[in-house]
Image (cartoon, rainbow, N blue to C red):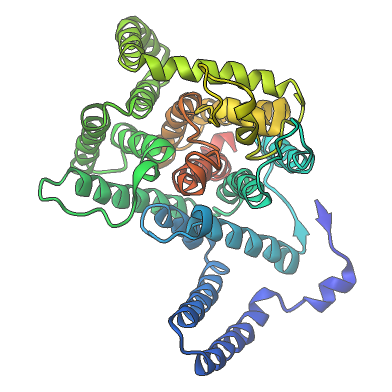
Length: 459
């Protein structure tokens, strides 16, 4: 914790809210002046973006929870993206973080993070990624140069924004009501898009495309729907049944409609089974007894029906492990390893390739320091969920904790099957971060649940 000087306190004694109104008025006047001189479409859009940014600052500085809801909705609703897939979800996370830091300095007069065992591995991952970016400017394998600087910065931003999304969820939820709004807004929006995709009338999906509606987003969608149906006894029976039906539709969509995309349904089924299994030791034993053979069958069938893909992934993993030996601590730098892969033939071809494995990606980019801190984060999140599952008040809070446990396991599995969690710049990339951000934000929210929803006798 760092306290600012008493002189700075006196200079900012009025607080951020005192300066907000004149800043907004000045921004509107400035925007009007710009609008009067420039009439092209591009400049009109810039002015519109300026006004939207001012409005966003005005709203979220007083109601941070609205900003967090905005992150979730922008990950599904806003269809626009910029260069290299830069998208509003990333911009909103950066903006909310900046407002949070300014608020701590000006209003709270100290910079402080909530106490959590997840903080240390997150900070290590952040620092490690930045150090890897610095060493990534070196030529690790002559004659090839590292990735372009823009690609390296884009890859670094994914690491940074993932951690910041977690910190926002852990530090900016000051009332459990905001988390409720976040969950219900997310479930309602995701349900709408699921129905659009399942519609027999050919309704176009104008928003998400490709991997943006899969991966971590889908895991949290299924886990929250199932946990709220099974554990949230504050809901009426009608709503719990509706959420139960929604869970079945989610499973149908992933296991039947999208069966070829095996990473989705396999991780989802395991996540839902874990939610039920960790409720009690009896459930766990039943799950282990009845679920082992179906799980083995599904995994072996998934591999057998896509054998070439899995074999090439193993070949890629072996090559990347060989590359990591060059700098095992900090790796080759964000986005860089793909530019060096043509030096290592895969199945006789000298081509650039990705690992399609988050652990290998992270190790190649940020070394074992980054990979181990990444694993450490989810160990801490999972352990926190297990500790909280019967210490928080029943109803919504308990359901969210169980959903977090299942989603954490699903996330760990997804990371082994593709770069869903820290999207690799040259694969899922920045657009894929729209799905990943949902998981990082909700994982951070689990820390807030532990702070806000403990039963009175455990506080």
